[in-house]
Image (cartoon, rainbow, N blue to C red; front, side, top):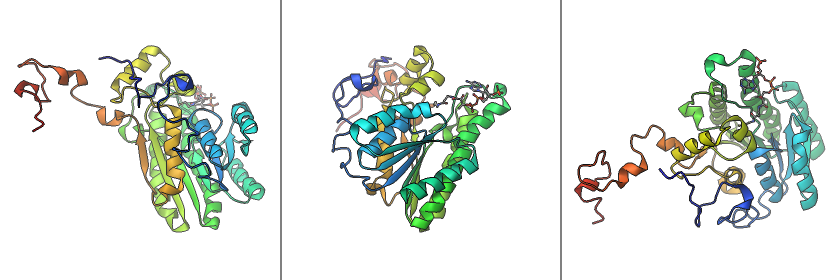
Length: 316
Ligand code: COA
């Protein structure tokens, strides 16, 4: 199989912003009108790096006042500098999401400071590949603490204020392995499965308060953290890419765009949904035939699921 990702029109590369980009740039108004989130306050956990950074950037660009919250202030510098250049309203707070009182203080403090919180994006996560039989209790607790506990603490702390406002939108970043499972990440898969259940539960419970709760489940996408922790070698990366029907990893900005889509007014009737953005990977897992099997032309070649031996599929 040719593992080279297509790069023609409509096929962005995953080489970051330096490669040719046939899609509109992220600030192109064809993605979202410039004031889509004007007047709204958005909190993004882990909002200074990776996908979180891209979501925060998109919200700020479209007019939201954005607060990024994570453990390390070093991770805030890039977006704060960009916000200063672009004139966006972005502020940063340090917090360990595993500490429920600290998360509650963060929420209460922001309400006092900004008057409201309209959007919460539970993006912060920790992940690494480790066989289950070798995973230490601390490692399990670290990931469950950040992903599952942290998402609940933040949802509860900000959700209380959203209930008082009678309006709010929460977006949780999960992963397709929340329901498929995935060898090597039992900690993350278990945590994400819990967050998916939390998404659906809170969506139903808080809908009468005007709060929407949705999730996004990206397949592999390019980020420094994922590269380091999940596909540390080119060989692994290529192998993963070969399994994706669209033959490339997602770019961060296109995953972020779908997050914004679920948060934007156009999605106001959507709650409890989990949007998969994985290039078809989940659908292809466990497939019995590879695409090259369909290309066999000779009568008698096996397998022949496309019916080539009978003269090929009819378009009559
Ligand atoms: N493999 C196995 N165990 C690991 C590990 C790895 N790659 N990384 C961390 N752990 C274990 C530690 O050994 C420790 O267990 P121990 O006390 O039994 O030795 C436990 O996890 C906690 O690690 P520690 O680094 O002390 O906790 P932390 O709370 O500071 O950070 C993470 C935990 C997961 C957040 C941290 O490892 C991390 O920053 N990972 C990268 C960030 C990330 O995951 N981004 C998302 C990419 S998709």
